[in-house]
Image 1 (cartoon, each protein chain N blue to C red):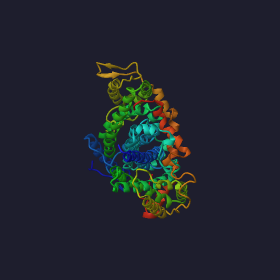
Image 2 (cartoon, one colour):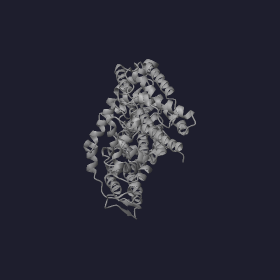
Image 3 (cartoon, rainbow over the protein chains, first blue to last red):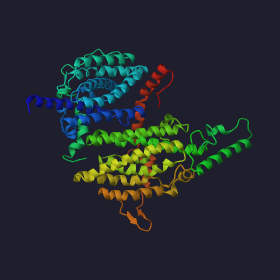
Image 4 (cartoon, rainbow over the protein chains, first blue to last red):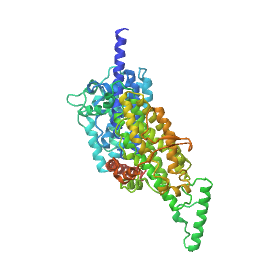
Length: 245
Length: 338
């Protein structure tokens, strides 16, 4: 096997891991909502989105190795997800802001990948349909909360502001993903600016990356709450080494 | 049933009619209703129905809807900790189905003129009940399997006859609910089988869960026939088709061979096949525990209701925002509800 092929295979596995971890971690966070959503329709919707993401994660992680070994037996520093998806749910506005930022990115990302002829195009073609619904869901709630009551407006504004600093990382190049990152970022910014404008939310003005953390999640640097999330997710699997479920 | 249609029972009295005329009209409506029930026809929302029939249905459908949404809690307790991604996906889908069942059932209750808001208020204030089984805790992963096998199994035994319930919207909702429930039951059984055939620790976890869930599952069929306050009238109206004790026996007869196939035991020394009856005999149920849990003294009554109330209160600003937005943009409450 020639060196470039080996490199390509490693890059492919690395990219699958990065996208798979994004989907897995966000699915885990959304799963925390079960039984606590503000209205019954949202129990169904949030679970549906979480399930789509979990399905994507399982396909992607299986491209990189054994899905359960990767999900349950890696340490925090080996996860390659962006920090945005690991952010705690917060109130419903925070969850919706996180969904808006991330699903807009995923829709554009999978759109680009589906249009290409790279190794992810087939998977992306299916995923793009799912994430278009996720984006639609997030957009509609952003409008309702932003342009709803004074309280919902304030909450939505705070949530959009708080998560803004995690959005720059989405556009760091990922080895193995053949993407036009600049086009991705400008399309993302245009879409989010449009939705927030219609929601009467002021576009956040702060930095889009933290002082030392640009691209951090993709390099295995995460935020404090992530370790707790993993502890909860992994403890049962790790308590029974070698068991099948 | 379409022969006699009236919006609600209150609308039956003709304005200015004499008492005798009203009584005669009432008797005519009742006769048509009784005949429809006797002929196994479906009663539909716009048909005339006795107020007590309506109230009994609302009580039963509401309790069922509440059970679906409270029942999400003990299982949601394990979504974040499921031991494999496959099991996590199955569990998430199951909890989502339960929310969906809640939606169909609240909609069925709405056809009787009772809004979801009203019913949720009654749940939150303790004026309406949910199935007492959900006041037991899910302590280990095996509890998720035991709930699927036993609790969903008991629920299906109760609910399959409801697909032939005399009230149309409830019967139709139950057809879909039962299909999904039987899927859940098979998944629960399969999860327990994997544990039972797994490591020693996994097998012990499965046995412990079955030991804890067996008796509460038998209590799900309600008190013995002699003490059941609602059974006789519900059977006469064909809301209910079989008595509590009949359904309980049917469940035991199905569960015993399944436990053997699972390689797990059931915690009842009196459990044995009775050749003469053609059924399994089983030991006495501790009804003191049943009534105690029902009155609020179960291990999780407060926890379940508090969590539900909290979710509702925390979500108030979201529902208000949706209503305000809909009003601004369409002039109606549109999709904002509950």
